[in-house]
Image 1: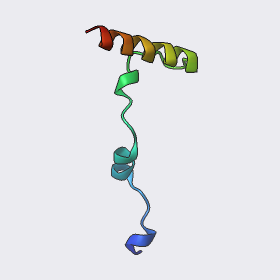
Image 2 (image 1 turned 120 degrees about the vertical axis):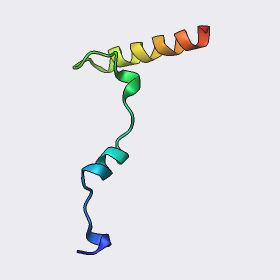
Image 3 (image 1 turned 90 degrees about the horizontal axis):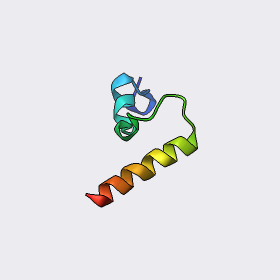
Image 4 (image 1 turned 60 degrees about the vertical axis):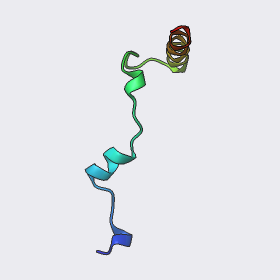
Length: 49
């Protein structure tokens, strides 16, 4: 198999995935509104510091 036909392995997949650390305190299964509220609160807290 040539490099042109090489598929992503697990190491490549980890590199391609974006960081989700900023969502660690959001509960699993929450919806868009909860995520939006959480992100807004985080931004407000950062701007007040």
